[in-house]
Length: 254
Image (cartoon, rainbow, N blue to C red; front, side):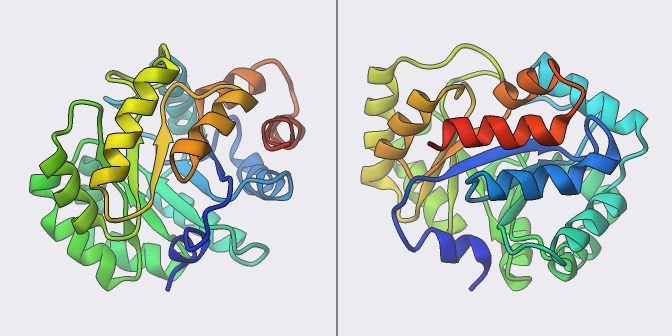
């Protein structure tokens, strides 16, 4: 049983911050994860920067470009996760796009993730019908393949995706890209009720979550709330990203 499987055994409120690995500086990444954990984060999602991040809005695209300029690579990210593992058992999922992973070598990548202590993988541009090898290799390496569903995903497909994922699925809360307008509460409630009726595994919600109220509402309807763009907006206001993460996560978890 990996760390993701363990934390989702119990239905408790979960906040899952998203950080682009190596943003705003490589030296801050480990301390940001540790600060998030100390302030109440249940799990962390680390973005692997890519030059053409289709699912990301302008804000996260900017962080991805900055991380690339900072020299962030897949190898560096895996070393960073390994270093975090010397100090923490917080579940870590990596989010990235398929082309860099294919260039790295998917088998090599999966084995390296397992060695480093990665618990989950999110690949937003890999359609579920093309994800069989990815899912199989993830599970062989005790990594949770976190597949995506959206408001327009049919019930039968939700059933198939959750069965394939097994451990966790990621519900896109709006159609579009990250950092854009949130769905209304009633739209979310209807959507997540449908997910609940059709998913055989826990499900978390991301895109468009900003406030403590959002966190409470999402956790009443799902198993966790992913927050990314809102944290980055806060970090842009300060020169101390670690302290910013500590304070912001503390604010939305209490």
